Length: 306
Image (cartoon, one colour):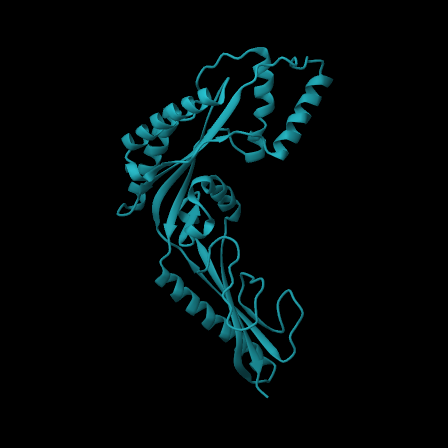
């Protein structure tokens, strides 16, 4: 099955490699050593599925003096958040909470935390004493889906806006909760808050994505059209060169989207509870309905008829 994210190559013969998102033909290969006596054609077909789901991901985090206490607090928050999502119209089976894990800063976040401490020291601010109370932070990803099929575009947008407004007011991760921190905890919180810069968002802030589905039949039809384009482009080049196109030597295909940065972040957030990305091969994910787009690319290699 061709995936919309990453590169999975279908091969009939010996050809495999990078497929550009344009339609053209050429002698030899693209981005690799040319093959004498061969003509390459590439075809691309876009697919635009209708939005079928509004999907939300949010990281829930709690901390306490012991792991047992932190896990208990996280379960209480997760159960309350899941109950609210059902009240907001999500089916119970469409509310999923991942297994908890201990929250740790990434290597990049640790480097930025050291920079924060260095800047604070240069500014004359005292560093936290070595007796800073130890706390354990645990986190869990919650994913919620709302079905959107059967709605007009205006009704769809209004429904999604209503859901986002309700979720924001619910403050699932407790971002707006008043918390009393000791001076030492304030220093620690300042260092940990740098993950905002690493992820480009506030920790615990819900993220929303529109999801479209591409059936195997639609994808197969797009692949056939892309192959026809690849063959036509190879034929055009062969005709221009005054040669005859021979038998098909090999063919490969792949699929891409225009928002792979968004997809990387989305699947990273989903990965803890949704398994490998291959499970989402028929999904297209985007931040807006109009951005739901996937394209299939086919590269065909033909021999030159002697």
